[in-house]
Image (tube, rainbow, N blue to C red):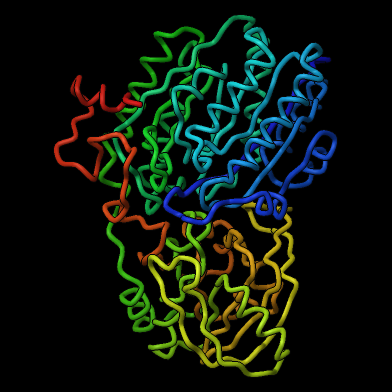
Length: 506
């Protein structure tokens, strides 16, 4: 690739379409938005773009930064911001298109825009329209991607995360850039085939160090050893998105269409055969709390409230689990982050050491929660700004807005003004709480927290609870989802002709 000019583009957000609050331009600005040369600042942040840059420079290629926007998981992206970003990216591509040799794009794969179906397909069609058919485009994805046919038709090759927790984000960018280098070596067209599996697979058992997801990732790596196969991706999909293409998927890039199709179908069958393993039963919050208190251990027990967490697209303002911790008299504990700007500001007003009566949370996700009245002492007040140091999101600047630590009974509650992903214990440390010295910490985060918390945690204790990020998909009112689909419908038969047609329906 020496001397080749490669455009870089990123648009990343995971959308829970049942979350009624939009992801706005402010959310992207709070996390990461960069245009043109500003993208080189991402070099020190764990991201696909930093991986792109590293490999391009190793190969002597010339990166041409276009635009990057990243926001945490949440509700549908505001259509005004999306159109602004797409149009700006298109203008910048138009200005350099005659000097480009390739394009690398980092997408999440489950981004949706309010009132604008299949925005990722729209964005990529705009990119393809500008650069033309002769320019190769390679795309990277999260393995929770939901991929439409329109999106599929726009790129020449793809790779995706292979770990959960996602500790290979930067490495995925490197793989994407190396895949592009291979395209130039082959000097022939590639073919990308996708096979949809009619299944909603939950986040409860997708660790990649053991279990069914580890087996599927291993199957994809074996598939890549076959002649002509350039990349194989296993997508679990993001079930909390109501789209016609929400499901698990196998996608293969190969040098000929028959190989790509055959291998993708084989990998899809591997997913289907393990479908029952991805939604294991979990206890309720009350059951899990009672269990860990009845069986104490030396060291930290991490309670994981995933269904109201940002990574599931939840509001992060549900106080129900906190209420249960207080009801049973849990001591030496921390909880958070709980989004409540008014409560955080009230804490600032009374100051550290002051006392206040306040109703916590239950103001955003009113579908599932009510405010929790508490008497609290203000332990700390911060600006909510910190830098990720964990295995996921290393180097990322997090801005929780005005933040307070309220001591309620035996629980220190981190109350924030903004939603942020909660997989890094630095979130607590920045506010003066050392989670390693607590007996119990309840964090609004699921499996992604394991990577950063593993060195300090004796016991992980996930549970199910209410929230827009629920893993009980029968509670969600799907209107656009392909049907029939497992586990919502009986007698779904993927291996039959009818089942295969259902899996391909858009």
